[in-house]
Image (tube, rainbow over all chains, first blue to last red; front, side):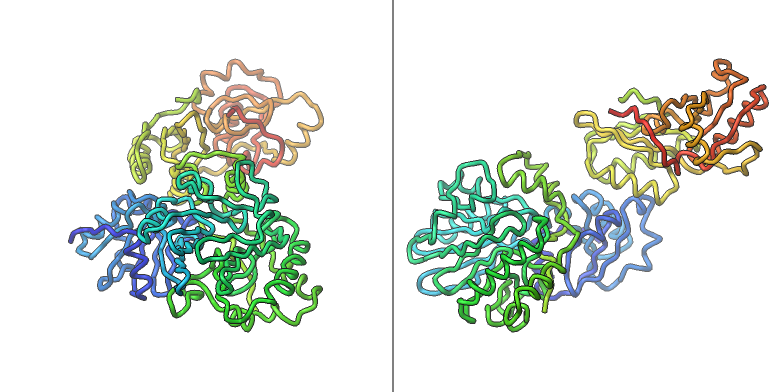
Length: 377
Length: 190
């Protein structure tokens, strides 16, 4: 049987369709434990490729004969070798093109909102759990929290026949390298970031803006001192319909307070955000966060990551009728010791203090998303 | 190449995964147990994979040195026959550490391979790999108190026997050896 090659997109489409897949992951066990292709219908077997150099005989009884087998590794080479061995045994086998590196870089685009004033697209970075957005209105587009794959946003803008004129980062990201600065250079768009985040290049300080207006869109900057990951993160309230919540509110809970090393202080600011600002926002507003933890758990019926504020409030008792003391205690206790891989270097790059070539950027970003480790209920 | 002496060097530069490990596996078959292979690679993933492969196969992963774009891995082939320790005079790691702390004049003889010594050794230890002991023992003082150490106490046992037979009078085998050494160490890797 011949071996077929599958792209990250093709495999993710299969995951979305709920297809039953069998993934033979031939990376070493630590990497597999750290992160993998996630899906409720996926069965896994992890055997490092270096245990299979002499052949696949020893694992044949662990491999189903009636299912498609997808072999994955870090970059492609080893999965190809193992896929060919399985294929020689007569099994229908494919391997992931570009390996987990390409899985980490794949963005899935989905329209999440449309009215007569704007259309909003969500970009899901499935391998890392990061979300970014494009708000289109008239002939312009605004990008929220772009990843470093700037071509994807430029292409998306081209498909809509609009020009990217504004780019915003809700906070200085610790888990992935922001594409904001590069995308601004490439498109001539304005790039906004909180000055308190410590970036050293030219940008527009969000502290100076209450609103960003373009075409028929008004993006209200809800700037609350929330030193979570870093000293200043903000949310954006768009046309009284959508809330880009950054890392403060997720579909299944509140953001994690620990990366700044000041869990309690941050928790008080988060309380202020939730009880004094977000509490003014109505239940029907849709919350669009910048992260999720589990796609299949958090995806809604419409097929994107997002939820009405009312529903999130209902699911998270902590968001209403709590004393500040109880709230702080609860949030501080959720502080986790697991940090995103290489977060200090990534923060350095996003501030413009450190530079890294593309290969280095890939390396730093590889691995699981640990920003959306959160508590629920 | 590094200046660390090994038994064989494998050039796996420019090769992508899985080839560095495939070639390592093939090349190590040509070595005797206990001999050391240096693998020159450029694939960054090779470090974690080689470590894990060594764990699964019983080879000893010694360490990795980065020089420019080249990654040099050192692996000592496993499968050595492990004999019961015979040399009667033993000293455990803790007692050796105490002696070191007391400023006594002592000789620590490290009989591991040069690459193992290069990555970590007790400061002041003399390096004579077990295979070179016959030629080089004449440089050592037969009357001095001598503490022979290796990774786990096996090579040092053989070395201690050999030294005693050659007329050395106060030879101790350090057990368990460097694997459990908690005291200060020095590395030649920069």
